[in-house]
Length: 136
Image (cartoon, rainbow, N blue to C red):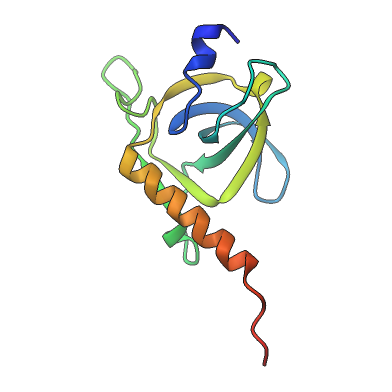
C-alpha cells in the first residue's frame, strides 16, 4: 500500500475487503469499517473491522446495527460522505480481523455519531458475552 493510502487508514474509514460471513464461509468484498487500524504498512499487518451488508437488520439484531447511507449519483458515483453505492448496515456482532493486503478499496467515512453508536453497541455485546450465566 502506498504511504499516502496507509495514512488514510483511520477509525471510521470505510473499506472494501473480502471477509467471512457470520457462518465463517468466505464471501467476496464487502464494506467494512475500521475499528483498529494497522500498526504498520506491512501487507501482513492486521486491522480490526466491523462488517457491513445491504441486508437490513432482522428481529434480534436491530439494536446492534448502524446504517450508512449509500447512493448512486447520476454518473454512477458513490455517496459523497460514505463512498458507498448502496445503503449498508454495519453490525456490532460481525467483527473480523483482516490483513492489510486484503484491502481492495478505500471508501470514505461513517458519520461520527453513527461510529460512536457502533462502538457503544460493540461494548454492550462484549459485556453481555463476558457476563456470567444466570443461575436457575
